[in-house]
Image (cartoon, rainbow, N blue to C red; front, side, top):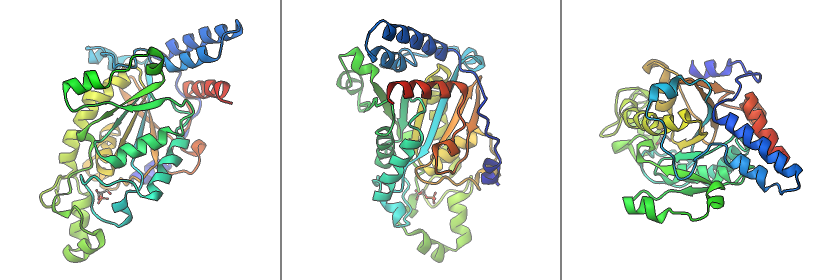
Length: 330
Ligand SMILES: O=C(O)[C@@H](CO)OP(=O)(O)O
């Protein structure tokens, strides 16, 4: 039912005007253009694109007044959600959960392909789970981004690691970087005693219905594992506490995560019921784009589609961003 809903979404390219931080960005671009006219290098234009969101790196504190931020309809930011590409255990049809399995060759190709689809969408910050398949996906996708910023995984082992090991001493290098935050809260649901078992064999042993219940019901956990509801309690809480404030401050964010952690986040974004979420399936390596504005998340484009244009309907501001990339990197 959910997929059907997605399929009927009306694509609208004449959408929302970008404001807030993006006005800042447009202003920077105008300044940069003027600098170019006066014979200075294209580097200025690059600076302007880099400062799309001011105070990007190190992470700037966002407003404490969440209600003000939420209601601020002049701020509009992009949120990309992406499930990792196929992993070596997806390939073997094994329950994976929190086991830290890398991408398969096909998964690597899916991540690169996903990167092409989002290559014209601004990305200021990346959040991934602590699992390598999500991190590989994000890193590989960013190799295709036209802006060519460098994603830098932030150390998070200790306060010293956070503050000292991740230091970068050049402002220009910082501007050309994208901070990547890893969080265990975005990990795949813990599949308990099913981890490492073959999905088909498990269905034959316990019955299709039981296994489907473990895999897709909202509140029934697999043996000694997490239900979607339990997974959602940590993943959605993390999203609300860490990702949403960045969007509210005008930053464009990509979240690379997993089938079930993302199902729970999408359930929250789209206000799905526990019944509706049971029908939500996310293919590997397929990015989804949302626009955040005035406390609302608006999905742009469809869940499936082989071409960038088929996946995303650009807002005016996204189109402007793309135009500037064209100018820079033709
Ligand atoms: O094995 C897993 O970790 C997940 C995602 O691949 O499987 P399922 O589709 O059963 O939620």
